[in-house]
Each structure stands twice: as C-alpha cells, then as structure tokens.
Image 1 (cartoon, rainbow, N blue to C red):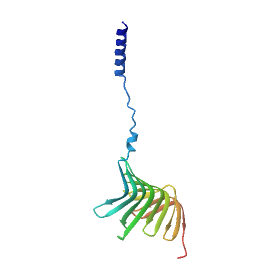
Image 2: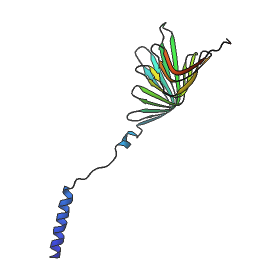
Image 3: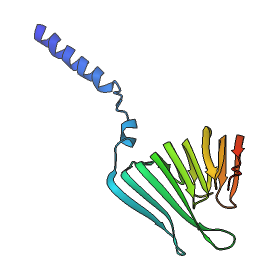
Image 4: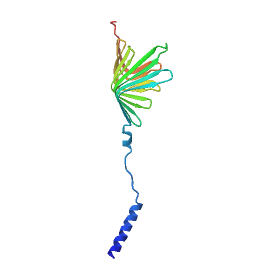
Length: 175
C-alpha cells in the first residue's frame, strides 16, 4: 500500500512539473559586447569612384555587432573646396566610437584643417554622411595665428561654416 501511494505521488509530481512553464532567463545583452574582430595598428580606407576620401589610422580597433571602437586613432578627411583646391581635415582622439555614419571622438580631441585651423576639446561628434561636426562642451583653438575659445561648436564641412556659443576670439596684431 505504501509503495502504491509513493508511485502515485511520483506520477502526480511528474505530471505537475511537466505542465509548469520554465523561463529561460539568459541575458542577450552580453551578445552585443562580444568583440567580433580585433585589429592592432590598423589603417582603414574609404574609397569612392572618384577618390580616397577617408583614412582611419588606429593603434587598436575592435568591431562589435553594432559599433566600432578605436583607440589612439586619427581620422583623415580629404575633400575639395569651391576653387577645387584640396583640403585635408585631421581629427585625433584617444577613443573613437563609430555607429553607422556617426563618429564620436572622446578625450584629447584635436581637429586640424590644413595649416590654418586647430581645435582642442574633449568631445566631438562627426556625422560622415552630412559632414557636420558638433560638440556640447568648451573648446579652444587657433585660426591662423589668432586664438579662439568657446563652447557648443558646429562645423559644417560642406560649406565650411563654423558656429559656436560664448566665443572669445583674440586677434594677434603682431604679424
């Protein structure tokens, strides 16, 4: 009799556990953080039918599913002005995070256009599709030999417009 009760109770417990749903609680957020590719001392080129217009030179590049992260890198952009003269823009940063067409330059960001514009800041966001660079923190730099300070910069590399808030511009009269 005791064995019969024991067997029936095992059958009943097994039937109950069969119909109880089980949640799989594994987190998929870790899947995005896994590096797909890692490059050391890499040079990456962007080629078009007309020219090579973008070069990224980096000490370490890590490609994830939705972003690229580059350490100690600089981005070289080549374009032409209205007089068909070549212009070279260089952007350097300790860390660059690229998602689609957006580059986010973080820490020790330096922007240089040929020999006449330099800007230093700790954050800069560049949209490669629209060719517009912006930031929300203070910056300093030079325009030829003149000093420039401000915040909330807006650089339009298509028509070479430059805007900033709270700008202080010191003109060097000793030339």
